[in-house]
Image (tube, rainbow, N blue to C red; front, top):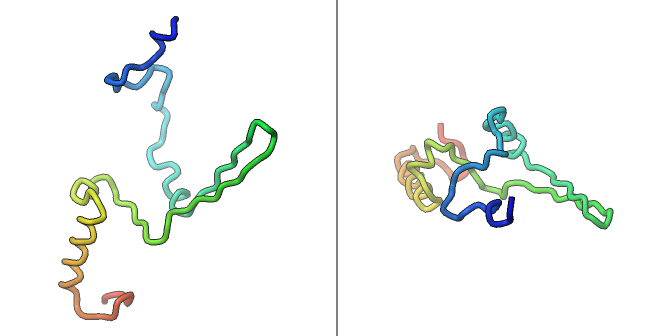
Length: 97
């Protein structure tokens, strides 16, 4: 096999045959990701680097079916502000009853 035939063409969006996700489980790491995660990088010089990651404060992840209607934060915020105006008056940060 030559180098040219092993390259994937930009307009070819088919999954390569060597990638098999038939045993994959959708959402398997979802809850762990929500809590934050740690990546351990083993460098070629023998050292190890630990990177802690967490979602930034205020990040909310929308389910795919909801994302169809709310594609960006501007739309989400505009919609939620409209709903807030319908709620009984309460202090910001206080749960509405």
